[in-house]
Image (tube, rainbow, N blue to C red):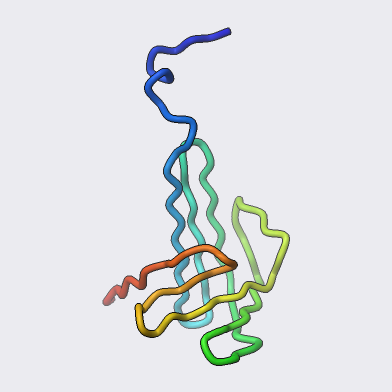
Length: 98
């Protein structure tokens, strides 16, 4: 058994920050937490749109994270200006100006 004094004050759960960026048919996915960083880049296209629900097809995926799906579902909440991606969220929109 190893008892690191620093780890005694670390909770079992750690913060997880996930960021999706969609821009001009390209996407970037970043997720990081205590000991697990993931990064993906690639292309996307909208293959279905029904009201607030979009289905995106991801392709040309490169990176160190692995997804079992190449299609994701995005639910747009126009009132709150948020997204729910694959059942997680809400993601807050951040607009960057070049």
